[in-house]
Length: 99
Image 1 (tube, rainbow, N blue to C red):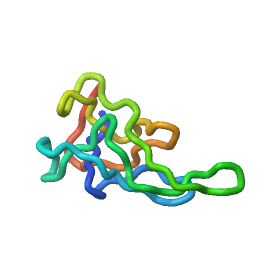
Image 2 (image 1 turned 30 degrees about the vertical axis):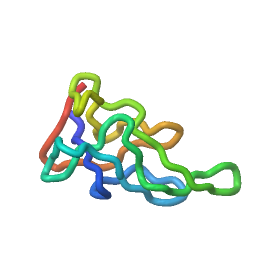
Image 3 (image 1 turned 120 degrees about the vertical axis):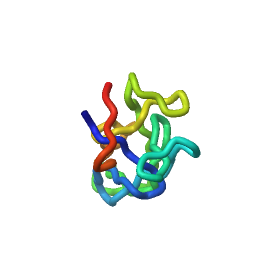
Image 4 (image 1 turned 90 degrees about the vertical axis):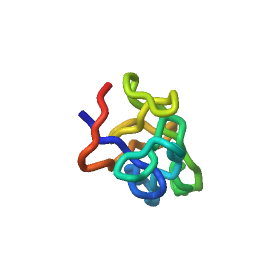
């Protein structure tokens, strides 16, 4: 079962041209005292490759958990995909969410 990811720059996404952190989070549902990053929550601005150059963009979690909801959105977890980007790379050491 994958670990739940948190926002506020605590957890990270798999980088490409530059590193990025999970930025968006639930204002009232927390894991380890930090808001959970959910489906639709964005990461920090970072560089993405386009041929030989890199440009700035941000990306939300495309699909979170289908069975665990946070504020009616899928709970974000390690390896959940980001829209036109990479995947969530890190999460809580002791809180996990299935489905």
